[in-house]
Image 1: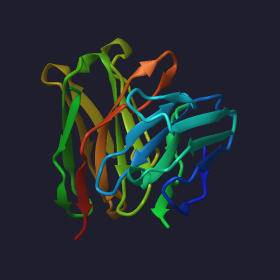
Image 2 (image 1 turned 90 degrees about the horizontal axis):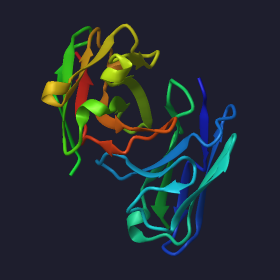
Image 3 (image 1 turned 90 degrees about the vertical axis):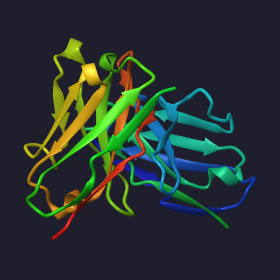
Length: 107
Length: 123
């Protein structure tokens, strides 16, 4: 199975900050990576697919990059509604796996 | 508007069974692959399994943690997805989400999710 390791696991940050979350895969997965946002008590929401394609309706402050084994999700200027947990997901092969999550908290 | 509504969760004893349902609306359900994802309390997301569409013979795949105990099925005439869970273990306690998994080219993503239904396995 392909393992995904996200870093950091937790980040205390402020409105207006630029945030980068990294997701490393245990083997090369081209650009078969998606990113999700989850708020407490809610289902996850798709943000980015194919490593860098922003889902329609998602604010442009979110961006994704990377290929192979290293990927990043960047939020250019954090807004209050962005404080949540973020997960990467690989869809290179089955079984699909998720990273362990990165929780963003207000400093 | 695409909508997925999960139901069927509850409290069940270890070794017991439960059947979850997911009713879809707002899209052509029969065209799509559908997946189940679960999340144990306070933990991350875990893929449970997939059922493909009629074109792909309704074939299924499962995570190793549930293979042989869980069965995914669908009824396209009712726009419904099911997860039959047998031989439940305490480790199966989680919120269960159904998700739509469109295949775009050779890629997929979980673009719509149900609200989740909570399964608690406890004596």
